Length: 128
Length: 233
Image (cartoon, rainbow over all chains, first blue to last red; front, side, top):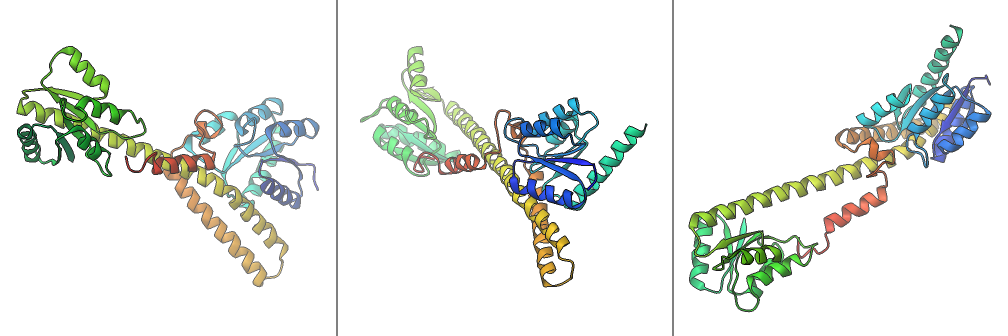
């Protein structure tokens, strides 16, 4: 296991558990949260640099969570994973600070690739 | 279009009927208010009615009032035909629920023009209802897509994790790949469906006018289709 840490935020337990399992199998340190509020609490304790966020969360939604994450952990990269897509939503995601955007169902290979690229990007930023 | 002409004077009724038929309308007739009301409440009723004010039983004003008293009933376009011509009469007719008013003795061209106005407004109303129904269906479809995409995501991910654990090619691996491919195909279908829906993300993200409550959407849609009383569409 490496020190690269990922946070999965999804209120669907099955999806959250499966994503956590997949990223752990790929060697990442992974935490899960079922709501935006829980995600912020987890970030306070063990901040992740790459976050996969569902948009339709109970309480604070994924867009507002992304804004909070970007405000407090500016190095982090947030990726939206949503069950419903529209052009408006895509624009909202860009405005909120999401780095990328996937519509469910999305293949693991795509999520693993975006995680790898995101950590590479963060590493490049830190070396400058 | 089906039109009801109601008048207790058989000669005047015949004149109106013949004119309407000449202009291409299908015409039903009634010689009193109760019969008119009954025809307007029957299944597939006339969309427009030309009612004489003074009729035995219940008069034209009362027919209008009773039709409008049930707001869930899709009332026809109502034109009152009368010899009364004072402003207070016009007001009483409109207050009772009439859409228009023609003073007797009427000009043939005026009857034609006012009937056409009624038909035009009914066509606009129909278009609006069609649009509203389509919007409801699309919003429901969008909610269905979201609800389907959640379990599909779990299926695709579980199948991929399982296939990674099955190292040897064989029946089990083939079955897992079939599950994965089928779930992915379903995902492609929901994506295509989402392309034709136009629900907005503002609604989706918990702002006013939510679309995501699938059960509520389905209930609204079924209520809309069933209507409050199927006998009075």
